[in-house]
Length: 104
Image 1 (cartoon, one colour):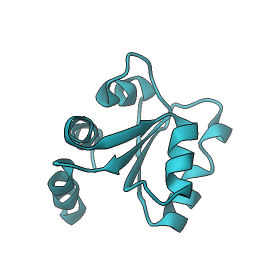
Image 2 (cartoon, one colour):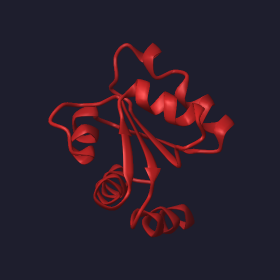
Image 3 (cartoon, one colour):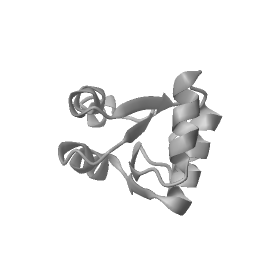
Image 4 (cartoon, helix red, strand yellow):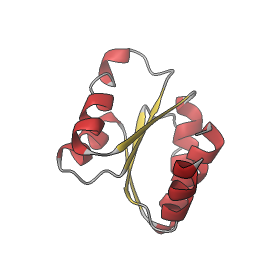
C-alpha cells in the first residue's frame, strides 16, 4: 500500500468517519478494540514511543501501516503539526478504499 493511498484513506475517514491522532490516543483506541487501521510515521523519534503499536495492532486485529513522514501524516489527519500515529476508528466512506487496497 503506497503512502498516497494511505493518506487518501485518512482524509476520507476524517470527513466521513472518525480518527484518533497521537500515540497515546491511538494506543487507547487499540486497547479498547476500536481501531480499524493504525498508521505510524517511520520518521518518529524516539522510536520507543511507537514500538508497541505493531504488536498491539496485531493482537487486536487492526491493520497496521507505516508511512514515511509524520508531517504528511498530520496534514492528512487535518492537523497543522506532524503526528507519530493515527488510528481510524470509523472508516465511513473510506471502507471501500481500504477494501480495494487490500485486494492489490
